[in-house]
Length: 152
Picture (cartoon, rainbow, N blue to C red):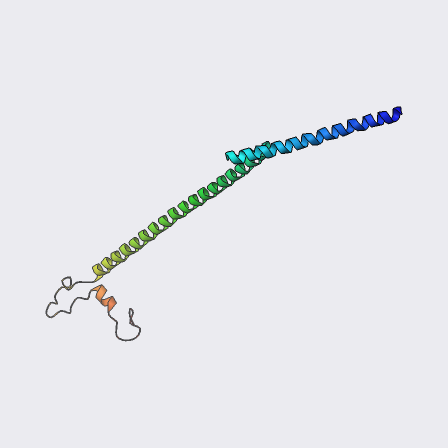
């Protein structure tokens, strides 16, 4: 009998302990539900520490993404600025080269004009003497006959 009383007492203790644990869980669940209901009415949610930590991690991820995008755009902008400067320099060099070519062309035309002998430079022929032959005129005329030097 002592054994059965002891067993009943032990069983009663276990039931009380299990009931207490269940009641504690039910109290916690009801407490959370009541708190959520109150928060829903108030409109301000209360986050658990784990939810707060998750939210902070998500915010850090978003900040890191924004920083990464900003860095990408800064690098892209710097690259584009460098490209624009190079293009502007190349265009400037091209224009300078064209200007220089035009100046060279004008200088060559001026030199060619200076080479052309004006009629005033040729002395009028003296009657009875053959007309003096200017070297440049001689070079420009074709000699008649084969094998006669320049132009032949």
